[in-house]
Image (cartoon, rainbow, N blue to C red; front, side, top):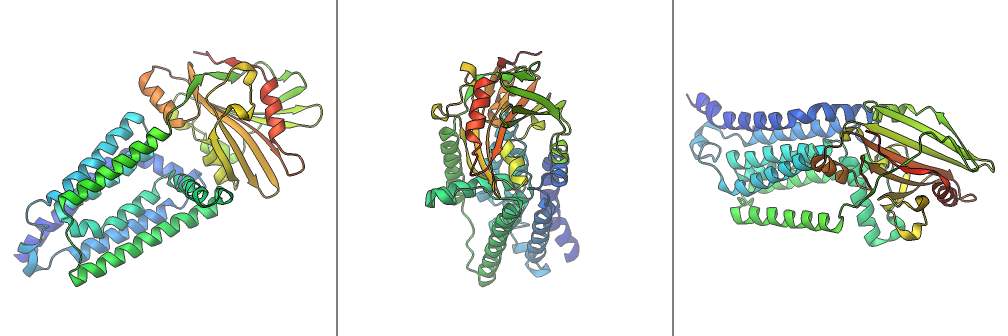
Length: 404
């Protein structure tokens, strides 16, 4: 009889948490699987997912009450109301992800909702023990490697500007592995405290303060990075030659084909001047904003170490023939090579340096044509690429993009 009680009460609550989490995560599963297959920065995401699932099973197995203690377990008593703020916070995050059309936010919120539901149904102590599983699940999501790299660069720059450079694929994997190890060590510490009876039950006020602090930090981050929008410009497609520059269509790399394979158009041009300067222009065009990726994401996966990635400024002296799009400027190094680049995303009416802003445009306008343009020049210490990029941008025939 006790065996049936144990199954029908605690196990059913655990099953409910799993089913709700899987249902919310299901729309993101094709995107997750595709990114694991094609992106160098996300290729090992399944390892973090496996670690998270194993940790979750371990915690649930050890946390399920024995038969004599079933009646006293919070898993069979009423709800732990301290979990409501955490659950509500992740629901709000999921709604924001849907409105802004950001996949990683939607998937991360799905995992967070599952964790908040576990807090509500299984108790605060068990939710704290499941916290490493939540962190490992987040590390498994696509683009979290890139986001971790950007966070690392930002924190490094606070210590020394020289440290604020991007990481290659191996460095990103080590960074994520370090975060995973810290999460598991935290879980072991919490488990030790729980065995000693020193692990306090989170109260509703504490969880509410945590949610409020997270919302405040998110609001501060958004406020400090307002979306920049400018006139939509594009390289005139019927001009393969202008001034001293001669252009030709060249094959895209296999990595670019994998990353942008679903796009309606993927083309790459190589422009050369008569005095030996070279510039490449990558153009991605799609009906779906999700087919576009930030160039930093691709460059990081190709071994480039980013030293600069920020919005275009007047002192960059990139004139664009008098038309100034909202664009971002890149600087990176790979061995002895140095790269200088400028890129922007565009709809039929405006351009932006931020992919999230483009998704916001998608919500506000009926545009169905989206593109990303990346202009890069490569040199070395003896022949820096910045003057070549500056010259090309000044002399290229930029025109408004108005194709229906």
